[in-house]
Length: 504
Image (cartoon, rainbow, N blue to C red):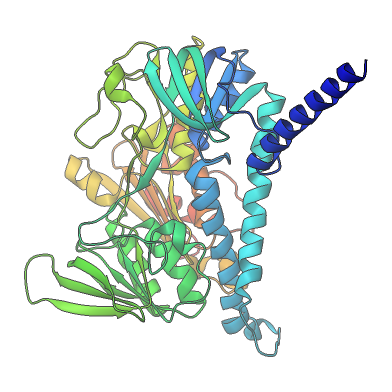
């Protein structure tokens, strides 16, 4: 009996030791390295960004057994974790600091010295991000979506193998696979991003101190927004752009006004300039430059260089070659009008397919793709997808630019209204910019709306809705708007398009 008791105690000790080893190796969490049980579902979404998580939630709502795979370990993708959301948090915080420095006194608010507490600013940003990512996890649970943390690889038209973040692998078998892996930073020859001195937008969101000199490579949405953040906080910002204009997709008239506004904010621009290489010089970095059309080389020193030359589809490691999914010459997944790839059962949405690389476009793709899988009439109208630059002033647009309409040969009219003539803008002392509407000369149908001014990103949605319904400028003009509001500027611009504005 004593021998049996001692054997039992020895077995207990061995088991407890093994369990302790699992606890210790797992970083304080029970962890097993065996392959997880296979999942058999209706829909598996590879990627948990704006397109992916929306697709997964919609699939759950429609009664599909759904799994979403995300390697980051935090839902929301680039947008929520290191893109749209944290950048907007810093844009707002830096704007508040700038206003306190330059505008509060004229509103009768007197302060002593105003200082930047960068760690507190970063904490507020991180708190916003964490709260939103946890919120998506809650929505997954609510809609019975299984969340798998790991790197997904498509191994057949109906199977995804996941390399789990916690070790081991898991296979997910599905009737439908949706690729929603988003995009990644575009690199440039001669520039190696180290996220310390030479940073992408990800590194620009976590700088430990305000750089004295910041050079931004690329004059698109991301570069101008992040340049604005650090410029407001005290950096000398220079934007180097290969092309001959900032934000080339923007209406030319609006773009010129926008650049003048940024220059008044002491942002410098070097257009038609190519960055040949960037080198660490010890204290900072040195950029070797030359004219994009050819010319004498020059150099530019900076503390930090932000590379914001665009983004490319993220399809690495997905196994697309093995299953035969076709890509176009730009590395995007080819799909039909139902988001179906050339491989039956495999779909793609968001930044990995053609179209604007915008979070809200990806969401619409995800929603419509799942509806189509369910046999419903899913649809996305890419002509009414808005674009917004969240600087100050904001710039927002939807539809065609004047240059595009002119090139198409359509006879058109233009109506404009300045915010200087808008009572709400004047009362809050934020009246820079204008609203511009372009409409078909014969039918008066609105073809494009472009806004530079306060809350442009909010005002633009009235134009999006109007264009979705095929409205005329007169339809907008004859719709009663609350007074005093910024939206009245859109009404007045519409009046100027088909007739005449009242207040200008």
